[in-house]
Image (cartoon, rainbow, N blue to C red; front, side, top):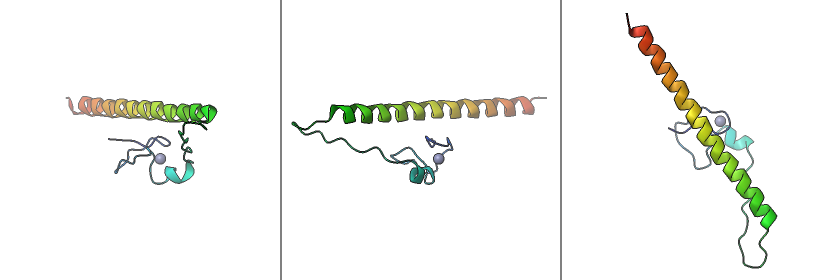
Length: 83
Ligand SMILES: [Zn+2]
């Protein structure tokens, strides 16, 4: 299961951007950096990499939090069933 990187809701259909249909409209896409041989913009490439990395870390953290939440919910349900 994937979850939205912005609002952390579970997504029915995983999107390549990592955002849900509502949040994708709010979040501005990061401009791609052209990788030609002579005009390579190192500052822009570094900034782009930073943004991508923080998105990746954010999505992994959100997914881990979501899994922990689900595990707690399951544990609580098991506790309630027990006499
Ligand atoms: Zn969202």
